[in-house]
Length: 185
Image 1: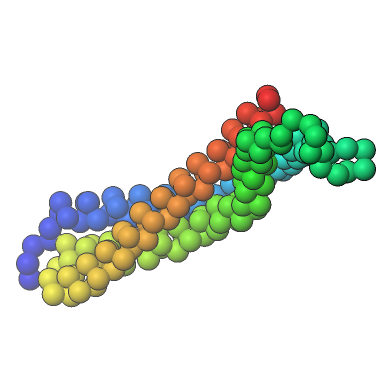
Image 2: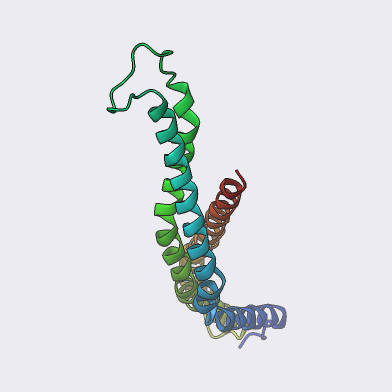
């Protein structure tokens, strides 16, 4: 029987411990995301609603300037300038777009924790293969088939989930920034 490969064994066990720690930390991720974002999303949506209403009022004010008491367009006045509506309409649309997407984004953000737990749990398969190979209990062919076969999809899933988490947090933060900027106007 061949000798145990201690460096590979140490690295594999270290990776297994890191994965276990990661899974342990992810257990409460959904609750932490909910705690961090729920109140902020509600406040941000309220601010976006208020900002959107202000923009609708600005649109109304521009249109109202060009109507007579009966609500008819006044042709004898200075010509209507549609460019005056460009900014308030664009601002309203932006507020509305952010407002409508916030609930879906917070739900998606909450679902990433359980998804990452599954991915990290599956990551134990190639690590166990490495441990068994280091202990000379698994042949090189089996290691390649199981270890590499699992490693590539798991790595892709991990990168995708982490990137999605970063994108969703970025977009929720952008909504907060927009709401605070619109509130200052």
